Amino acid sequence: MAVFFINHEDNMKSIKVGLLGIGTVGSGTFNVLKRNQEEIARRAGRGIEITMVAARNTARATELTHGEVKVVNDGNLVVNDPEIDIVVELIGGYDTARDLVLKAIANGKHVVTANKALIATHGNEIFKAAQEKGVMVAFEAAVAGGIPIIKALREGLTANRIQWVAGIINGTTNFILSEMRDKGLDFDVVLKEAQRLGYAEADPTFDIEGVDAAHKLTIMASIAFGIPVQFDKAHVEGITKLQASDITYAEKLGYRIKLLGITRQTEKGIELRVHPTLIPASRLIANVEGAMNAVVVRGDAVGEALYYGKGAGSEPTASAVIADLVDITRLATADPEHHVPSLAFQLNAMADTPVLPMSEVVTSYYLRIRVADQAGVLADVTRILADSTISIDAMLQKEPAEGEQQTDIIMLTHQTQEKNIEAAIAKIEALSTVVGKVTKIRLEELS
Image (cartoon, rainbow, N blue to C red):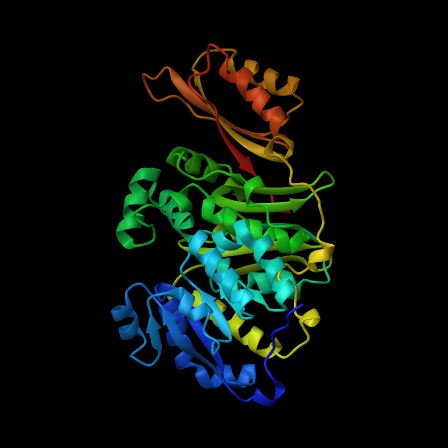
């Protein structure tokens, strides 16, 4: 096995870093590292300096780095440069990033990345390659920006048997849901405002459809439970179908709706799911507003721990990138067998616990049923639920507006298996007195 480490005699030499990409996060990393260089060197034990940057727009990269570093237009020049000790990958995406990261590893270089899509889809291959070369791959910035949740799960909570993790891990969707609740506006209206303010991309699909959150949840689940990254097995559901009326009804029942990433270990397997979720308004995480992120971890020894902060942005994410640079600098001379494992567990000790299909997940539900305003409708609905052994926890029936012949029935159920609620909904929708589709949103007490 080829092993890379920095010679003890060279301990006082600065660590040389190559950046792949200098967009929002890359420029933040350069600026924070330069501004706090003395403090960072005191903590790392030696200096850390960016000496090379690869960017498509070399003129802009030169301007951002004030002409202080070598700028190239080909990432291969960075990963193949013998002077570079650590490669920081900030270009995003899948294929090009994967190729460059694997080349850097093959060349004996440590890697820091903020690329959650890369780790969630190619992490198993990357970590195996890194172990074989005796180098480190760090990715704190890939999940929840400036919140050190990866380090908390991997190191701070290492004594615990993690029971579940639940997080608001996409700021764009949390901003949209906060605005929908505060202003009573529908999704489409708020999305346009979020794009205007820069909270949402021109193409917001990854955010609003839950894909970004699922990438991050996949990574946290692997660290929490010692399983390989398995993004393809995650249940992913976004917020595009949410109605302002559901947010209002949830409020009346004492709940807030958030796009939540949830992973839980059960007797049957691991839950891995992202979807809109009702949370009791009394929970701290339910009160996380705007573009902020928050993650709750439940461990058998520590109980519940909440991690809150900015989940994106130039300098918050740069904070996480630089923390990884410092960690690698501290450990660069250590025997590779004593590096902290990328996914908390040694690769040869990873579990093969299955990820549960959504049909097997047990949780509670919010149901909104549009019905004809006539006698016997409620009795029909409750009978169907009872026949499916689904009990009702709370109910709200809206009085129809004057002249209207239809109304909404809102129900909160106790816990049941997803396949049971789906079967019951199919029967409810078949009733002649039920109008259109039943709206179903999952509910978590997080207790």
